Amino acid sequence: MLLALDTATPFVTVALHDGEDVVVDLTAERALKHAEQLAPLIERALAQAAIVRQDLTAIAVGVGPGPFTGLRVGLVTARTLGFALEIPVYGVCSLDVLAVEAVATGAVDRDFVVATDARRKEVYLASYDERGARLDGPVVGRPADLATDIPAVGPGAALYVEAFPLRVGPTAPSAGWLARTVAEELAELRDPEPLYLRRPDADAPHAPKRVS
Image 1 (cartoon, rainbow, N blue to C red):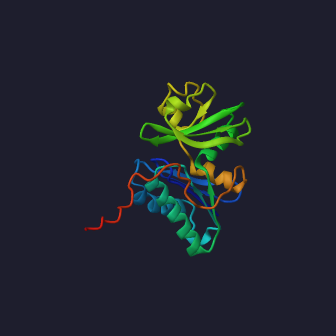
Image 2 (image 1 turned 120 degrees about the horizontal axis):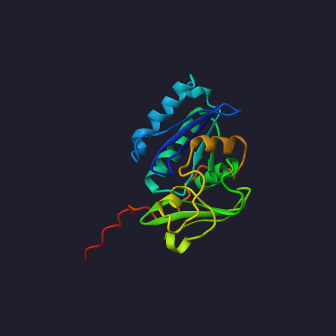
Image 3 (image 1 turned 120 degrees about the vertical axis):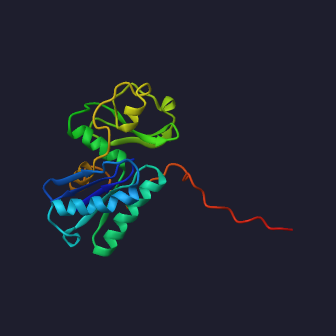
């Protein structure tokens, strides 16, 4: 059984894949609060599938790009579970998962972009061909600088409609589609390391200046 989880956006999402298809697909009801919501959502998914952690055979995790704090919660959880259970952990770019879903559901039939909310009035964006293969990115920037009139998928496109007028397809990452992506190897599988495109909001304090 494959456990998939993504914390790259404000809403935590968790799913289970039994080798043939997704059997549980859950999304937290409240935005943010990743640390408080992820563990209970995993336990809820396991309970719905009537399994325990020892039944897991692999873990899939979205590696972003995304805000530092939320992304770290998911990756630390995935790596910790993988280490404790001695099972592999596969990372996938969260934008790639949205691209896979858009192609598989027929939302796109030509080149398109995926955009997610990067906060600070910016978006994370990557471009894809009609098969969902990534052509460029991901990058981070202001919507006006990344604006396009080709089809746009994802929550960033929904948030900045003036920059992405041809909005189509899914508007939020799904752990269910992350699970399918890993199970069927529909996108590049990466090490479970965070895909950061800018510095964290909170910088480590500098060493105190020497008093002369």
